[in-house]
Length: 568
Image (cartoon, rainbow, N blue to C red):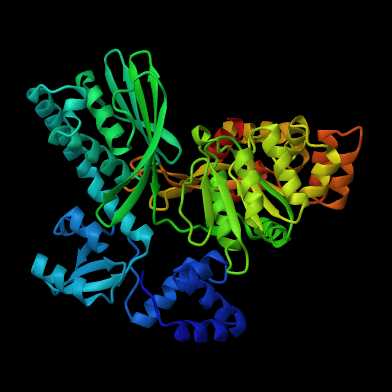
């Protein structure tokens, strides 16, 4: 990542009054310890924004900013550079100036070696522009339009070649065509920003689907004849038993795509027609995001920040499967990761490797469950404990006892909203007085798709949409506060977002701060969830739906998307 000297950055931030010298020096020391870069840490701490940092870089290196979209990129110029070279060098060629100079959006416009390489490659002078990840990704998406056709042809060619060779199952697992099929399916999924790949076997063939921005999309259908070989290849990569076809198996492996490395988590289960494979793609180099980057507004982020500064107690993140709970917990761990604290986690599985945090993965075969692992962790002198998920009474009990004995405990729970966590804990045999004593705050969340910034437009809401909003507000008991929106936002669909109108995801949140009045309600023998919710609203809690509406009003997502997610 492009950097400027720490002293220069320090001087700029001190002049702007964004940080004091002591805090900067402390952050710089911690940054060096963790092997991170200063800008990432300052952004994650909320000291500076991404936009502010990019403007600093532009001024320091005296290069203009590239603001790319589908209209500003000349595809003929773009394809002067092959996609693999563009991705490796982090460069997008997007236009040509009157004198023939080619405009190049670069992650690092100070890299003279890259500039010289590209000039030799395209046999033309280039003018460097500073580009952020979003700009570069827009350019890479334009490559993907043609890549889709090329990808399908490549897969079909390799399938035909595999069938011609006549090998089956394990024999074919290491053959070039099968290796190419699996590698290309992973590479294509990565180019589309897919989080998961599904190989589903049916009577008439294999259905390959990618989960993109939380929604499954059918990619292609493959001949059933190559299914055993593809499954065997994936098992080989994940170090699983190739000859086991009737028991579920889980594994993982690393896969390199250009300069990027993916951690791929594999799950295989037997079905009626054969084995179904699910692959979760996890960028191994991803840094913990700040709460603001996840989509949390400052009012909620401050509540969370206040509660994680406490030396003991529990902070729980709740929501359904796939709602981003683990990502939020990792974000909080990133905020807490300092040299003076010992952080230990027990997870299933470890999704991201975080420097200087002791991470343990559960392994039931070896006798490591959340409960047994947590008991062992308590003997490791931890300050902060992260339990991936509270699934049973035993784990709940040990987590509560840990929070009572001077540890800050972070964990997740499957509930629909924040207040429902309380009766859920009581159902797990946690006494109300203990729940009231240990809970600091509860965060509930869902993931919504963001409007594509390349094709966003505004429009007047339809009467049907207004009525849907009204009904939802009535269900929440907020009908009196309902004001029909005058303007709503949507995405038209473009090459950058693959025609969906959405690109990327963010979370909608609600944060229940456990105040003294809330504690009194929890320990009341006549505990009522409705009374708890009413008091939470009285004290200022904003529901996930309202938070979603705030984001829709700012053009970050659509009201239709908020309604879809809330009703799931």
